[in-house]
Length: 171
Image (tube, rainbow, N blue to C red):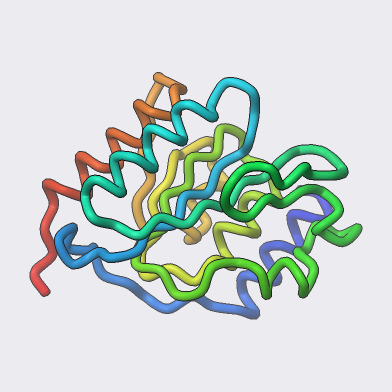
């Protein structure tokens, strides 16, 4: 385990997340999409946003660009390596720019990168769903993890949506 990973686990212990219940899809009003930007997934993310907007949900986008600078031409919040310190922790300016309280976070990350895990942990969402990428994903950040052999962003989104719409909470 690297030093950055140990510091991340320590950060998680110091900032415990509140326990959450499974959301009732009709009661969800705002959704935050977190993903790693690359050339192949922009159309998939647009399709995901369109599906959520058609369902009447307010959509916020947080994208991680694995580079030193971002061009900020796309909608939503763009985050890059310069937004994190040398230990991998997000800078205070990044934490201030993250979306406020949301009902649901859908993490569509394709790689288990530490900056993406920090952002998933720091986004203030009542329920967090994502893709299981490694054993370290079972560290309590997400409430629902989807494990699949198909690595397509749209497929994973559809699977998460299937579970969110078919499983109803007792609240």
